[in-house]
Image (cartoon, rainbow, N blue to C red; front, side, top):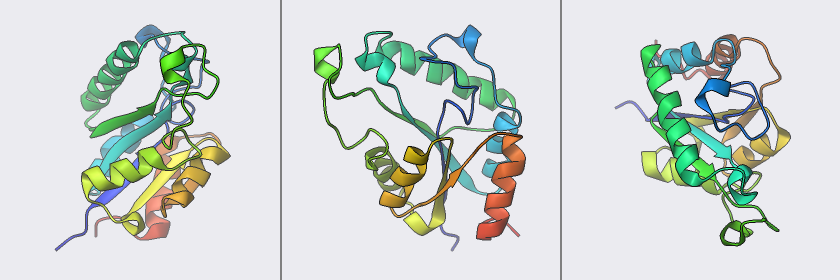
Length: 174
């Protein structure tokens, strides 16, 4: 029986070019190879999830509904490229937030591992069968706190980056 595999991706700076407090579909600029990387991962037997801090909610720049609508649109765009994002996890919290209900010191805001642990639990995946790609040291720190290998993406074609990780971890399908 094949073990379940999970790839966790940060959103801003990994899937899309990081534009401060992205909330509109027309502002999305995909990172080269990002949609192709998800489709390739799916073909390798990986579920792909996104784990992203979204403090723009706590700052009052946009609502959680706006975040969910953007994620639904992104998932549909990835599907057009032959891939599937199984789920989006986001943290709307920020200590000292302008919006009182989100002024929370939570366990889901990276570098804490809450979103990653939730995804592992939801998809019933062992940490050794998962990895995370993020563009910030806090992403890698969150992964490691959850027992997951974390990799720092610093630019370039995401598909090339992801393929090297999977082949080095020997998690690709034969």
